[in-house]
Image (cartoon, rainbow, N blue to C red; front, side, top):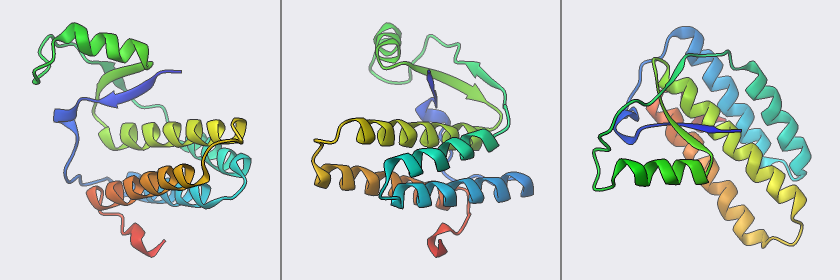
Length: 149
């Protein structure tokens, strides 16, 4: 599985959503908050898998550029992406790409949590809180009013 990421210079600061995407993303991000609050990692995984299944296929295109707009060389970024199974992409629906990536990352986190019972509970809780903060950040960017969830 490859995690699709937008390039940093294409991350939206504020994004107007279509009515359909507004409703869909609010529902998915609310479900993700519920999944992250689950004590049983498998329950959280199930919720996230259902949420991922609700996302429609959207068009993503591999990033085709030789400029990184950073001090890094292009081959350095390619090596990093290959090692961590990432693909930088472009899309006309950055909101779907961001939410799908977050859902995938949270699912993998919960799978690791489930398979490694000796992890430090404080670190697990810090990571959960970090993911929740990211959900709320996306909610603000997309104007979803998730604080009431």
